[in-house]
Amino acid sequence: MSDDTPQGELTLRTVAMPADVNVNGDIFGGWVLSQMDIAAGIVAAGRAKGRVTTVALDAMKFIRPVKVGNVLCIYGEISRIGRTSMAISIEAWVLRDVYGEREKVTEALFTFVAIDAEGKPRPVPDIS
Image (cartoon, rainbow, N blue to C red; front, side):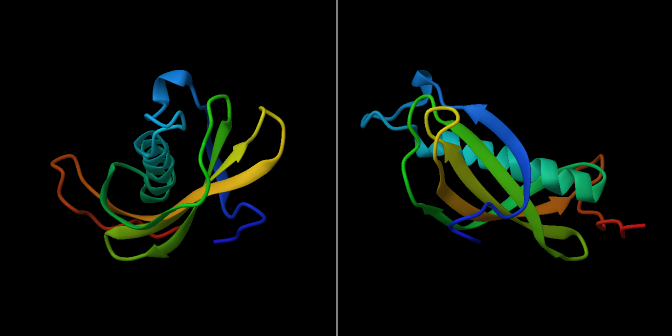
């Protein structure tokens, strides 16, 4: 994961709003984490061609705070594919003042499992 250029495909963009602040006036880390999980799920579901579920979150690292009004940009890429699981590398960057300086704010590695209609693991299909 790089500190100067986002790695992966831009998967999600949203604006940090006042309702999402913590007691310090910064955006609550749980809100950022939920946006990252959504983006990772989009990447995983696209590759799995169906339902997926989050099974693990590894190496979450907060680097800089997110402020109200920042545009949160989430980039994701597949790091590993197993028989039923996938590791998705996620980086969250912000645009300060909507179109200002871009800064990396956090990164994490999410593990997803492809599931069937009953919620049981199923193989991740081969790319054809």
